[in-house]
Image (tube, rainbow over all chains, first blue to last red; front, side, top):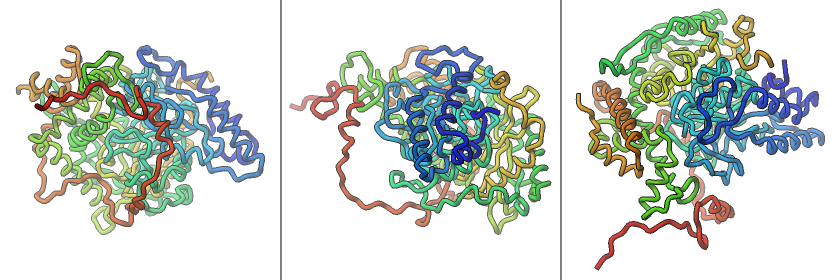
Length: 527
Length: 106
């Protein structure tokens, strides 16, 4: 076991006891980056690399060393360090970080050095964590594979670099899986933390909407976006959530609800908890271009089996498994998301115009309108352009009743499914719902990219929690026949993160001795 | 079924979106847009009980969850100068842009 493979919890412990210095921990992580990451993504870079992880857009080595030295200096003076003192972490390049390139993986922000730091990053740094750099994502988070990034080569899956890491927080999940930092700060709008976490075999949590401030997050779907932790262990995710959660004067949607210590009850087990299974999460429904009809298929057997195995483990640990929980509006999550997220994306992307910051066309424009058009044509890749066009169409006055208003009502219906399942006076009285995280394991690079409809359906099992705003966590739950990770998800009621983390820890503990837990991502085999 | 987004309607959207597309890009994007719209057709068929409210977001924000409003106080932003250094072109503290399309009045 190398230093780079230790959990945040173990590392913080060693650093606090001065068995390891923050500088040593940082150097070990940077050494791992050099060993496995290959060249960072860059504009017009090659798209066909399939050997290295390529998680990074920017490695901020010097700042990381300075942060680590500052932590060691504080320790030497006998000061009480923060809970994550000396722990190396990465930040999805959708957060503004002062004096660091903040690109959103888009050409339109390729020269943008942020003038301020996002609240969750500020809080990680204040807790003593050491930022190694910014990691890749789908352009403006628009995708489920990282392939839409303007910075290529984009992140690959450490378990098999010919496969995608998922997305949009693909760089975050890939980096954590490969030991390039113990933690990463991601965001989840339709599954963008949980889906890549499942694909890369790590823990990823989307907290309740509003639990973590969005200040400094480059906005996509403002009513859905949630920053959250990516980690290798449940305890690490809990420690990170402790640090980043809480109200923020800069974000009026950041909830004032008190933040409990998410690590306090981690080991208390699931005895007495009611955990549900729903037949509506056993299948995927998708649009078939050939027939023009909606098709429904059961989940692949190895994924369905992983969920059932997890249910057995939780049952053995004392949970009551409640089968047959109806979640009838699950299948409408993607159609409603296609509308709501595009309207919000189109609105949010209007600020990128070549006037106040970011890319401006080198052509001499005729007038201001021409400046906007040329700048945006050059700066945005195909996915942002597509989202803007779709958002403009479905929110146009004559269509918005049919699309946007209806999609917002569907969101109420999806929320209603969760309210009924978690109702303490209802039929099922669930503490959590257990589902698969994704309908497939990580797919090969190039398999789906370009088909925006099929790509969106990768989020079918994760997006309902975003519509409802409720918290959810994805956990590693085994390996496929192709040695690719499989993930399961626990979804709970508003602000029930402590309960979800406790159930997640119980599952982690119950499977600690299983053979797949000892397996390592392919890129680490000869390290 | 004919495409919902005709080339003319598509060009109108491109204009509204302040974009400019190559022929190849336009063909790909129009095709994808039509596929997305077909895939969400079922939205129209979802039975929605009368009185279902539209949800601006999933989590309710009652007063105990909502952060209280801060005091409405004016303050100078010392970083204003730094922020303006990010602009492609400025002059004497102003952002510089090419001519704004307008019509001369008589």
